[in-house]
Amino acid sequence: MLEKLQTLEERYNHLERLISDPDAMKDMATWQKNSRTHSKLTELITTFRDYKACQKTIDDTLELLREQLDDELRELAQSELNDAKALKEELEAKLRVLLLPKDPFDDKDVIMEIRGGAGGDEAALFAGDLFRMYSRYAESQRWRVEMIDSNPTDLGGFKEVVFSIAGAGAY
Picture 1 (cartoon, rainbow, N blue to C red):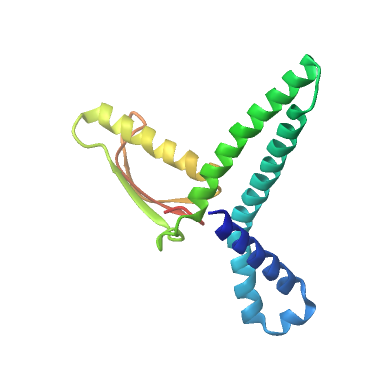
Picture 2 (cartoon, helix red, strand yellow):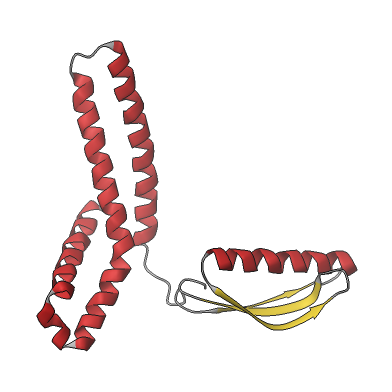
């Protein structure tokens, strides 16, 4: 995994040099392609760099623990080591997810339909709660929510609601 990440970081650095080169803008199609690829790699490479910094912190702290320290410094170093190891595990998990192949539908938009179903007013209220939950989540992700069709009830729920969610990663 680390070899692949190192290769991707080299590619990212190369793309960064290409994008910043003033002569590269002469071929706009290639520049845009390189810019898109660079932008897709940014989160992965940032996480990888954080991972490397965390690993360096662990190595430095282990080196410090090998030296003769008083109890207070040893305890502080041990605490820093434990925090760094926990962060390293989180970053490893995030890197594994970021390295997964992208689904072709990842960049698509979504049309959702929620129906109250059996249960009368309670089901309609639950459908309304679901709609509000999905809407708020979409807004927190900066996606656009657009109502397509709705059949509201008197109590504030929906017998049926159809809406679209548009934005990068909405699917």
